[in-house]
Image 1 (cartoon, protein in one colour):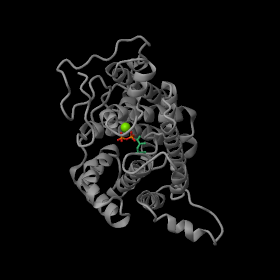
Image 2 (tube, rainbow, N blue to C red):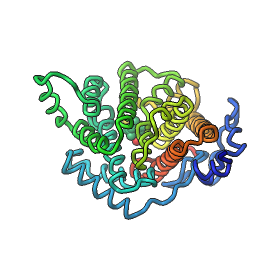
Image 3 (cartoon, rainbow, N blue to C red):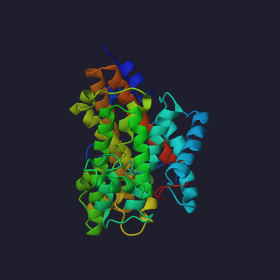
Length: 369
Ligand SMILES: CC(C)=CCC/C(C)=C(/C)COP(=O)(O)OP(=O)(O)O
Ligand SMILES: [Mg+2]
C-alpha cells in the first residue's frame, strides 16, 4: 500500500501532498483575501503576492540551449512561423527554457522538441487567428476548423484531397500545426494522438466562445467565464506529459472520471494563473479582453484590486483541490504509469507558473501592492 510519504515524493516533493492539511483547502466564501505583500510592489520576476505555487528545479542549461536552437531552426526553416519583425517576440517567448522546465523527465531532446513545436504552433494560431497579431472574432470558426484539419486530417475523395493538402501550407498556424503534429504522431501511440486531437477540439471550442462574446460585447457571469476558460485552456500541453516522458498512460486510465477531474482542476488552475500574470498585458490590448479579474470586477461590483485578489484566491482554491484530489486518486489507484502521469502534471503546472513568473519580457504585474 502506498503511504503518504511515498505520495509526497511521487507527486510533488516539498508541498506536503498526501498529508491531512491537503484536505483543509477550501476557503469559506467570506474568507479574507490573501494578504498583500508587506514589502510593497513585487519586483520584476517575483510571484504574484499570495499566489499558491511551488518552486521548480533549474532546467538542464545544455538542454535549454539545444531546444532553443532547434526550435528556432524549425520555426524559420521548416514552417516560416513568423515574419522577421516578430523575431524578438519569438525569442522573448523563451520556448526552450519553458518546455525544458515543464518536462524534466523527457528522456531525450527529441522528446522535448515534440512538446516545444506543439507549444509554438498553439501560440502562433492563438496570436494570429484570435488575438492582436492580426486575429479577429470575425470568421474565426471557419479558420479554426480548417486549421483543425492539420491535426485531424480530411478523408475525402481524390478529387478534393489535393486542395486540402495544399491548404495546410497556406499560413503559419496551419504549417506549424501540420508539421508539429507529424512529429508528434511519429512518437505517440494512436490513443495519445487521439487524446491530443480531442484536447485541441476543446481548445478551439473555447476560442469560439470567447470570440462570440467579444463580437456581441457580452460580459459573461463569473461561472460562465470559468466554463469558457476550462476549454480555452492550457490542457493540451500537460496532457501529453506521458508522450514527452517516453511512456504511455493507457486510454482507460486516462478516461477515469477521477483523473478527468484532476486534469480539469489542474488545467483550470494553471490557466487562471495566466489570467493573473497577463492581466496588465490584456488591459492594454484593444477592446475589452476578458480575464478573471476583469469579469469579477464587473459582475461582482468589486474594485480592480479586490477582483484581482479574489482571482488569486480562486486560483489557490483550484490548486488545493487539484492536489487533494490527485493525492486521493494516487492512494486509491497506485498504478505506476498513473502515478508518473500525476507527477508529470504537477511538475508541468509548476513549470508553467515558473515561466510566467520569470517571463518579464511578456508579463508585468499590476500595481496593487
Ligand atoms: C494551448 C495553448 C498554449 C494555447 C495558447 C493560448 C492559451 C489558450 C492560453 C491558455 C494562454 O492564455 P492567453 O491566450 O490569455 O495567453 P497570454 O495571456 O496572451 O499569454
Ligand atoms: Mg492571458
